Image (cartoon, rainbow, N blue to C red; front, side, top):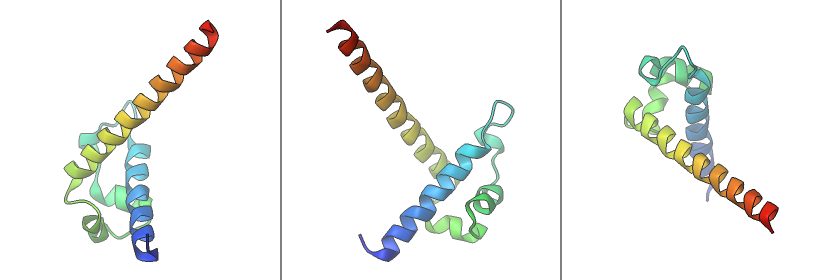
Length: 86
């Protein structure tokens, strides 16, 4: 992966992390602002569109990542249970 591609992936990751950090029990995804997410990620709001088509695409990426994390946690839990039973 070239330097440019690595930087693009790093910025994309920063946007996803910024969006996750703004979610809370009091704040839903629907209330997220593209400008706020971009500001927290350290980029100009217009640069957001180099990484995602729109906020909905960002949301879908967040759902995908959450699913991956959940599957990983479940796999680890099953492994711990299997070790305890052995």
